[in-house]
Image (cartoon, rainbow, N blue to C red; front, top):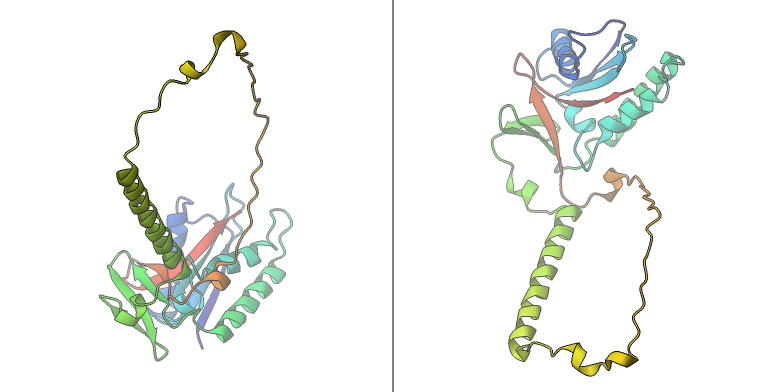
Length: 244
């Protein structure tokens, strides 16, 4: 029930910047389907440039089914799935397109990642929400969108409360016992009976491991927010891209 466009580009867009690619995708989508209609536009960069940039532009309901929020970043997953088949010099376009179509259907069947999901447009300062399967623009989020905290917010608040409680307890103990300055340890030592040893620790190396955590499965009860921007014609678009 949404518009879907795929553009395979064999020449650089504009000066080859990411911004030019984003603008091209948004504007071309609107030329094809209109402003603020429901759909997506995928651009696959086959120009052979030094840095290739693939981009997925979303519009209308597409911003919700194919979300780009921190807790629900489906767009990044879709871009990564496509680029697995686009290794430079060994591109498999049919498989990449098949992967894109699979993800389109998969997330469409799932619907929006949360009934409290929204997008914020920095260009206009307004929010987009999905109510009764209709996209609505509002100046302020409804109370039900902000009343429920996400797990991340709950953890931050819990740490803050624990820190405050610790500081209060520490000040209380200090006030109660009124610590005095300790005497010199030299008074307890017999100079001729003390032997001093020197030890050095040599730092060799450190290891850091990183594990990716699926953000969509780890989100809490909150809606989470995605980002959007305005096209040259004023239409609202979400999306995201990836370099290869």
